[in-house]
Image (tube, rainbow, N blue to C red; front, side, top):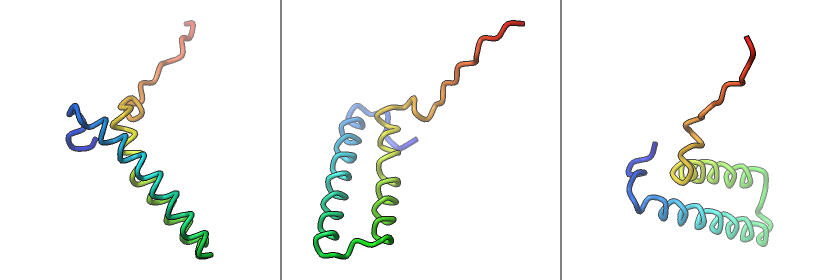
Length: 77
């Protein structure tokens, strides 16, 4: 997945990045809303920033999200 995601400090960095990203995007949204400059294109940009930063860091915190351990349904022969 990500480089150095197996290091002991990776989970702490991932948590910090997720929290700071959410706070920064909330502040950006509030700033744009207060200046009356929040339009569809800015909302799409904010959502895309969120989607490029948060899911890879969630994969560091919860590696089972990407492994996809599927359990097969038990069926009778």
